[in-house]
Image (cartoon, rainbow, N blue to C red; front, side, top):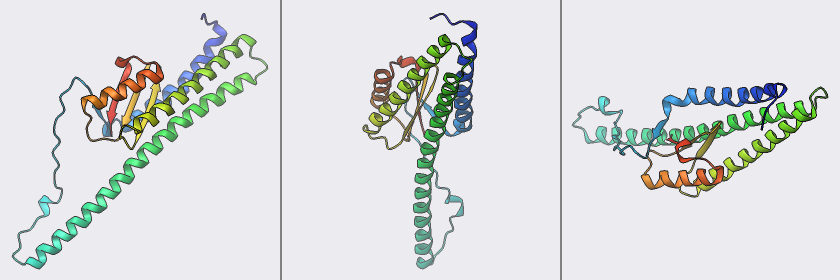
Amino acid sequence: MKIKKGSVAIYVLALMLVTAGYWNYISNESQTIETVSISQNQNDTETRDEHLGDATLVSNNELINEENANLENENKEETTETSISEDEYFQESKMSRDTMYSQTLETYQNILNNSNVSEEQKAIVTQEITELNREKNAIMICENLISTKGFSNCVIFVNLESISVIVESEELKADEIAQIQNIISREMEAKVENIHIMTK
């Protein structure tokens, strides 16, 4: 489709809304996310005990038992806090993404309601609204399908042709990566090389 000069502003406005919001959010979270590549070997992770430096050798069994009990309670609290934190991350990510979509759709609707916009431009905007709603629906389907594969949390971001998938997992096996790629590729009609899978 050839786009006339009068239509350029429409595309630029929508692109700025979605792209700016997406990259702003992703950049804030980039330090907490580990990119997973199917071509990379999966390395075993080592867990460090943060209480190791606080350990004290004592001869009294009661003191030892009390210290162990305190450590167990702290570990339980940390696990609970981590779980809540992860849930909040995915919930807030989806809310931020959905807000960007809502703002873009609102902008498009304002253009349609503007009597100074030509019918040709309105036709282009109507097509963009259809595509945006289709994309939102595809994202919802993909996130639901990925959750059936055993991932409790998942969020998907789309930036032009690039699709970022973030799942809650310490590491991903090759077959799990393939499953996620197949779902995204099929439902969103995306090329595998444009699908970027990350863990949180």
